[in-house]
Amino acid sequence: MTKIVILTGAGISAESGMGTFRDEGGLWAQMRIEDVATPEGFARDPALVHDFYNKRRAAAARALPNAAHEALARLQREWPGEVVIVTQNVDALHEKGGATGVIHMHGELARALCALCGNRWDAPEVMVVGERCPQCGGPTARPDVVWFGEMPYRMDEIYTHLAEATVFASIGTSGQVYPAAAFVMEAAEAGAHTVELNLEPSAVVSDFAETRFGKATEVVPAWVE
Ligand code: BJW
Image 1: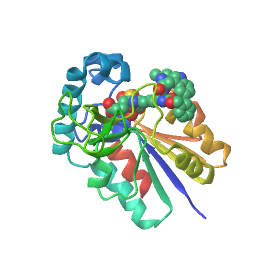
Image 2: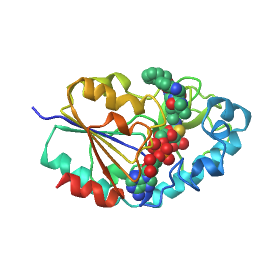
Image 3: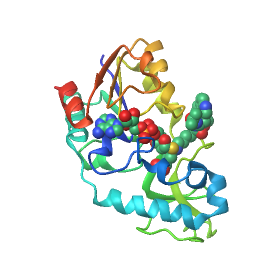
Image 4: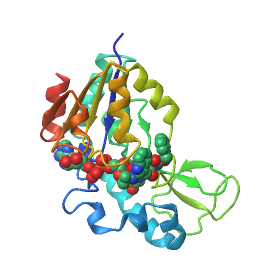
């Protein structure tokens, strides 16, 4: 039985025009992480955080999938039921490229979350401060994304997939954010062949059995073929 588990990060969407976080000129060079990607930052200045995510939501709505997203969707079609895509990305480019069942461990720009009751719903194009939850009525709507200090989504499911993986591929992620950066170790311990596909070596490159460096639109289709 083959089971291919794929972890993707901002690098896979870079050539679709979505900014990465830690590359030169990336999002964290423009904004302070603690201001826009922590619950404390949102409590301090919700307008700033909404503005950051509103702009990225608009950019994501315009963005088109690239050859790497499309290659992974093709892989899923060629191995029905055996390819799981776990993404740290909050855009919908895997789905736009034809992938199914994508696990968005860091949430989705297109969704809203109630900080009070946990309800989740489709976000409007532009979220504003004090927007009300359609379930509990609290003025507590926020972007449905996972900030530092919060638990990423669907972790039990992800660890089950990693324990069953025969191949684990990490694509376009710097390996600096946990728990995602430790998935390679989980998969390797389960006996999977591990491969990193990235522009440059990640912080956890030494944990991989195989590496392929280059642009996602080149190395991912080549790896899939
Ligand atoms: C290309 C390319 C091209 C460029 N082609 N490649 C140790 C263990 C566990 C946790 C911690 C720990 N130490 C600290 C923590 C806590 C913390 C953490 O990791 N901190 C680190 C900074 C040290 N983690 C958390 O708080 C997480 N929660 C948590 O740990 O809960 C407890 C828990 C414990 C144990 C198990 C389970 C849970 C939550 C982390 C939330 C991260 N949130 C963000 C924002 C999400 C919303 C948004 O999008 O705004 O997620 S931060 C940001 O970083 C975003 C990304 O998903 C994430 C990863 O970034 P990514 O994708 O790797 O992007 P970059 O920019 O870093 O890298 C891009 C890469 O692409 C580069 O390598 C380029 O070379 C490459 N590239 N162009 C191919 N064309």
